[in-house]
Amino acid sequence: MSMFESLGRFGAAIKHAHSRNRSVRALNSLPPEIQRDIGWPVSPRQDPQVTFPALLLGSAR
Image 1 (cartoon, helix red, strand yellow):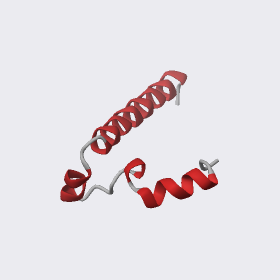
Image 2 (image 1 turned 135 degrees about the vertical axis):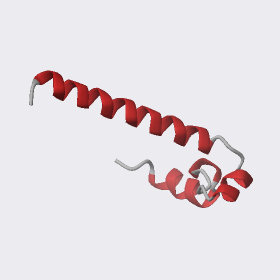
Image 3 (image 1 turned 120 degrees about the horizontal axis):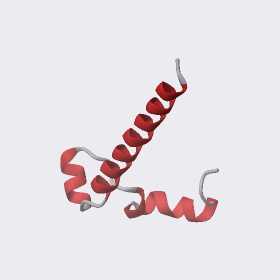
Image 4 (image 1 turned 60 degrees about the vertical axis):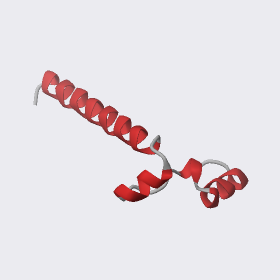
């Protein structure tokens, strides 16, 4: 495998991850009712049962 093939695969992986993260951000920005309708879990920032322990325990490391 040449160096350029490795760089191409790395670039494709970065592009795929960016696209996936952009899609997740778009789905998380939808109202909770629409998220539930399409089967997407409610975003953690809007779910009080998730945010309260996160405030107490801090973020995952």
